[in-house]
Length: 91
Image 1 (spheres, rainbow, N blue to C red):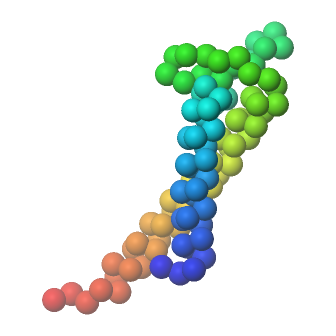
Image 2: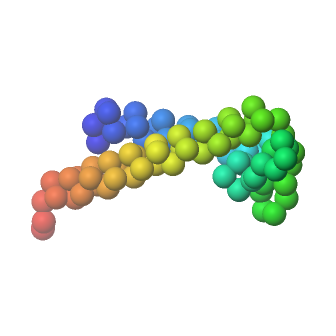
């Protein structure tokens, strides 16, 4: 595994951990939440928590970044794994 791949993998793991911790602290995430009449709600397992617009927007953008990061990290990991399997000698 190259240095670039390690950095991407570690960054994704850290980003995911931060996402989970902040979502737990805020009471959910915007991906599962909604906004209605100037009120903003984060949701987690059917429970909605009202938050500020700033917290809602932060949660929404962190979700987008997490998904985009995963879209990069997962295929990259698969390519690295495929490359490492083909380099092994067959006995």
